[in-house]
Amino acid sequence: MSQDSSDLKGASVSIDVSAIPLEPVGAGRYVIELLKNLPDFSGDMGILLISRYGDAKRWSKSVNESFLVQSLVPNNRAMRLAYERLSLGAQLERRGIKVHHGPHYTLPSTSKISLISTIHDLTFFDFPQYHSKSKVMFFRKAIADACKRADVIICVSQHTKSRLIELFDPKGEVSVIPHGVDTGRFKPEEDFVGQDQKIIDELILGDDFILYLGTVEGRKRIDVLVKAFDLLIKDKLIQNNVKLVMAGKNGWKTAEVEAAIKESPNSARILRLGWVADEAVPSLIRRSLAVVYPSQAEGFGLPVLEAMACGSKIITTQDTVMAEISNDVAYLCEPGLPESLEVAINSALCDLTNYSGSSNGEAVFNTRKQMGLYLARKSSWQESAKRHAEIYRRFK
Image (cartoon, rainbow, N blue to C red; front, side, top):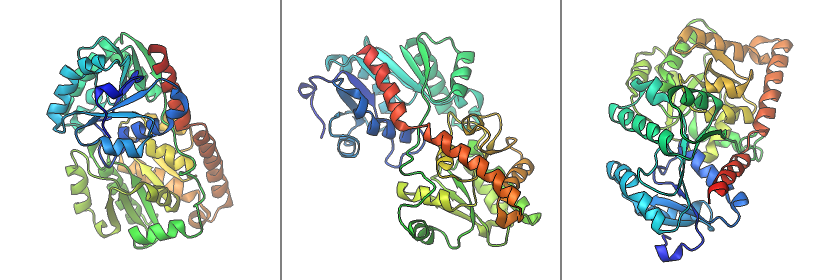
């Protein structure tokens, strides 16, 4: 339930959740996991969540009952952004807030309180062709303003921090706080016998598949994945029953993906699931022959870490943050080249005895698998929340 300002005694930190959709991915998942784990470290700070009109109930029920929630932000996107820029700062000051966190690039343009911004990636500068022109214009300005005004900028990877410093000279400190993974949910073993098969039977006809997990949009280079899948079939490197499964809702600029699927001679073997419920995702990862994430650019690439936690085969793009976080666990390909992606997928599949007949191949994969599990165990949302709380506390 939304509280009025008289109910906010003790709240010193506000977090803007107004940009988080009902079916969160990426940055939305980061915010939700942060809020789920933050109460263990927030102590007496008092957390106020700033939501859209009519959205307070979702946050009051789904995150933590100790948080206060206020529905201050208009639902219309343009009005929401205008409200944040022009009015939110004054509203927070009147409510006694000492520090405000904008977890999705943006901040109030006028405010005397301490400000923290999370910058997820710099694709608005480096790959503007993968965003709408209006978003490029808006977020370039928002990131530049955050660098001028934020007391702390949180980057989700060293990769993003390094690029941010190349582009700007931020006024405040820049802190790297990587994403985590819930190893109670993402793990090699299913919770009960038959769990994974039940989910696979509901979603997919047949058992053998290569998985793409994430938003379906241009910069993920799923068109390249479709072409690599065609090459694998043409070169007879995968069996006749293997499918390509895509799990994720549509984002922006999907025309290249749609065209690649339509033109594929193997379109009958390509399955689009759309957005998949949280409880089904670990099963899809575990039961896949390999998880392929061929994105050209990311701030973090959470599906790669989740696949590592499940002990799965992973193929991703070299010279990206995904290569950084997977640390020799993933099989790497050159960006944008179907032939290179075909080789990487084939290498991953050949490190399995049922494809190569080689015990050495199994040993190679097991080495990668154990390293992936080790890195995943070191990457917790609890550690991420703890480090956020430490920053909040310094300014409250």
